[in-house]
Image (cartoon, rainbow over all chains, first blue to last red):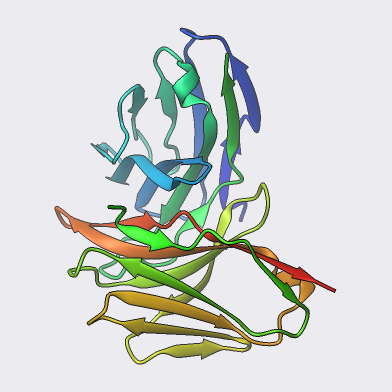
Length: 114
Length: 112
């Protein structure tokens, strides 16, 4: 199993550009999430999905879109990049369950917006 | 107020030392609690779950005090390889979905 994979590892964007961060998991997990991690802020939830076709907003959804057309894939789209979106982005997945279950993270995407 | 608060550290300790991290959470309805470990420039990984009765995994002991909304992690006989950031995580129910709420982390540096 590859676990959770993310591409790209690094990206530099100019303000106003759009891009898609890819995320895939091969563990047949129902739940998938996107987080951003900034110094001193911890991991903050951007969007999450409880299954194919179902997505919802997290704590910091503005400026980001997601879709979940398959169980495996959960791409994150930046519509018009802003310097405030400079961050490290982690995708994660876990099984559905009442007590949270173990969450598996991808290796992260480091994004710099100029 | 943040939902999960941790002392950011860093905690600088010699090999073999015992070190304890604390964490407080604000949502009294939280049901599940975890400690994750994050190495520099890597993704977080589950270290251990935290149970009401307290639990131990080798050199690591986790305790939960629901009345005080307080979680702790004790590391005995610290190793150089324990150097990392330790994230306190609690769950928050939202429409049937258990969100994981992460603290900002406590950094540990173990030196020879």
